[in-house]
Image 1 (spheres, rainbow, N blue to C red):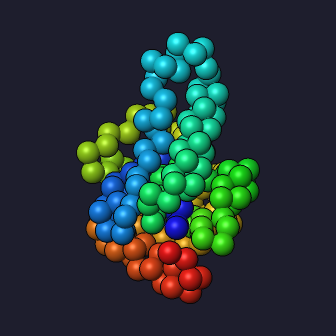
Image 2 (cartoon, helix red, strand yellow):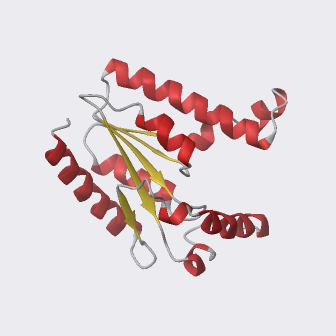
Image 3 (cartoon, rainbow, N blue to C red):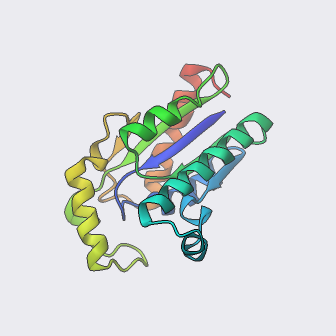
Length: 175
């Protein structure tokens, strides 16, 4: 089994590419982390923004563990910006049958700051993107692959990732 995270800053293409990968990878589940806690539920639980993201991550971890133990999927895919702490936490999912793969989408900053696809960025999102580049989300030291997708279509990016995962799976002997 492969557990695959697409890392990268806001507007790097993580969700768009993940939806394509879901169709391209064998027996793949895509977990949309943003949808694991609604804004209404976050408000009802009186969670701050940071606490809300922490709750989403906890729910993601619960789902991963649940699906990992049931062996329902060959590939479990999610898209979430990687931090050092999360990498070390999620790396613990690995065992003899499971490989954790972290792929970073790293378009150039000026590309990431533009409206891409149907997404219209707010000023707050643009500010956060700049902060994420400053913090190094585009050049994760924990990435198995860093992919500059500035001038690729989402389909081209997904194809490169699919080939990388297949090669990595063959080398490591994971299923």
